[in-house]
Amino acid sequence: KVVNVYSARHYDNDRKLYQSFQSETGIRVNWVEADADKLIERIRSEGGNSPADILLTVDGGRLWRAQEAGLLKPVRSSVLTKAIPPSLREPSGHWFGISKRARVLVYNKSKVSPSELSTYEDLASGKWKGRLVSRSSTHVYNQSLLGAIIAASGEKAASAWVRGIVGNFAIPPEGNDTAQIRLVSSGRGDITFVNHYYLARLAESIKPDEQAIARSVGLFFPNQRLRGTHVNISGAGLVKTSKNQGAAIRFLEYLVGRTSQVLLSQGNNEYPVVAGTPLDPTVARYGRFIEDPVNAAVFGKNNNLALRIADQAGWK
Image (cartoon, rainbow, N blue to C red; front, side, top):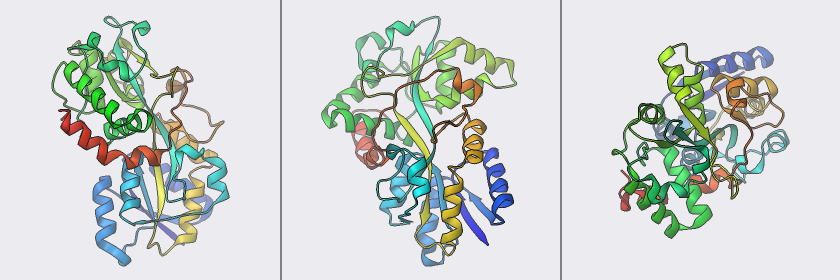
């Protein structure tokens, strides 16, 4: 038996997960790693001849794109529905969250007090003028954050928020999430919003300069008195043309087992989707927080609208 995984997750720990699944089940895992959009296009172009059984990727927006392209088949599994909270899986079973990432505020400790912080929406206020840094709106992480804001507050409010943060940028958007943390640490900006694990990686680095960066900044969970902090996912779905559906569904179910949840969360400093799974020690130190309960399919569906709003409001 075999299961063929097309994965956009480029983490060494995932290979341990594949090996563990193979050892426990006897089902061999073949995997191909590439950018999510390239994998989606590859499955589409391969059509009925695609060897892919599972699409594994990060962000609800990318999973939604695969679903919209008609590439995924709904799965009915009590194992998955019992283990994964409803907000972290597509309602009809097209895809399932397997780990979580929180989009948090990271601030320069010498310039910002936690008492000044509250919400994503507050980043559009005048007090942050010339102090905010961000990666581009063309990246799916920011499209999903904006998609969640659209879901919570509507298009008009989301557009006003984007105009506000654009007016507060210290420099034009550039670089990835780690680059934003570096900018805040160096004083080029005072505050940013990033996925939490980028800070955890710096904190756990063997490089003294990266450890120093992590110590110089603080992490804040926004919107705790409102809807909660935006949480995105890594997730997986069954490819519609899978030739190994039984093995593929067994693999999906394995991803929410304890061994997999520990590997997924502690290997990349993510949060597990299954309650009771021990957290990575660095992540545990960030404390508990309230999560925005909006379904990942909702902000995923809103990605295209989010990009259009961002573009019109000048967030490049």
